[in-house]
Amino acid sequence: MDALKVHIVPLNEFGDRVTGIKILLSGNPDYVVSFIRRQANRVIHSIDRVALSHPNPHIFYEVPHTLYSLIINDMQ
Image: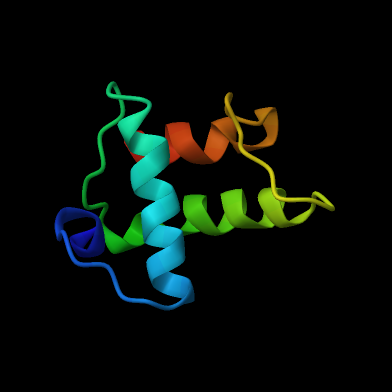
């Protein structure tokens, strides 16, 4: 999250990913990036597993149905 706030991005793979995220966010002004407590890592790890199950890079425009219950539980 801190990397998204600074103007200088490292010239490495991490910096490339940060730049890509900034580009995606600039095209979608309704999105908000914020700090999430550590317990929510279960949801993001599940999202990673779903994303990595695709043979090519994939952007989800809707929440996969398999993740709804995890997200709802973490919101309570």
